[in-house]
Length: 219
Image (cartoon, rainbow, N blue to C red; front, side, top):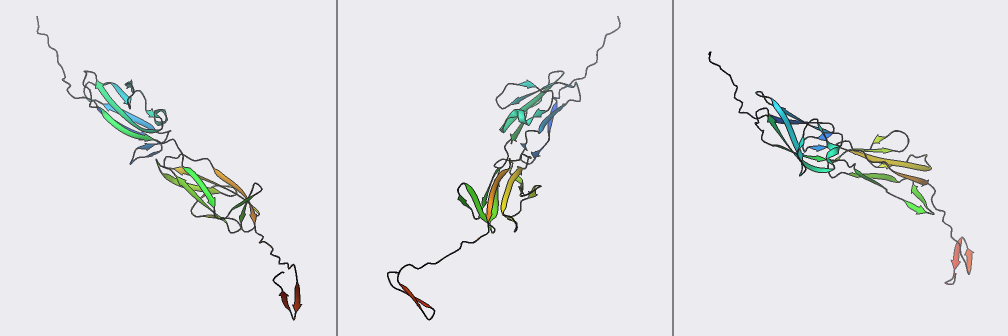
């Protein structure tokens, strides 16, 4: 019979796994918003990729079929390990990624420079200004805003009360570097522009002579 022959291509190379991020993120420190996605890709130029698996932290190994949504990982730091196998069983070295998911908006507060509370009402003077603070321990604060009437404006310095105002409402909010936005923190005030009236009265012995008032120690 004629000799039978078979040709083979020897594949000794494992797939190569790469990753990319999409959505709001601080790329330099791999901090992600809940809406971000983590994409993985495996390439094999010989027999081709058979499957790709991933593991989050100490969880079970799963088959990778679509990008991972950061919100599903949960708040905080995570370690993701990914590997791939080609059609002849070559397995890639594990690719390990570390990301931090930030789902928490900045903590916002404000304080008036002068304030008094009387009968459950909050009073300020016409000279009162309002100072805002915003803190975010993970992604960091990106923008600060205030609103007194209408649209939100960028907060750059203490907010003053308009000269004609007799009442004053103010709100503050902040956004971090992965676009988590805080709920508005608000305050309503009565503006007191009237100085106290001071009166002096004398009780006891007294006499006026040539425009001078004379009193005794008992007055």
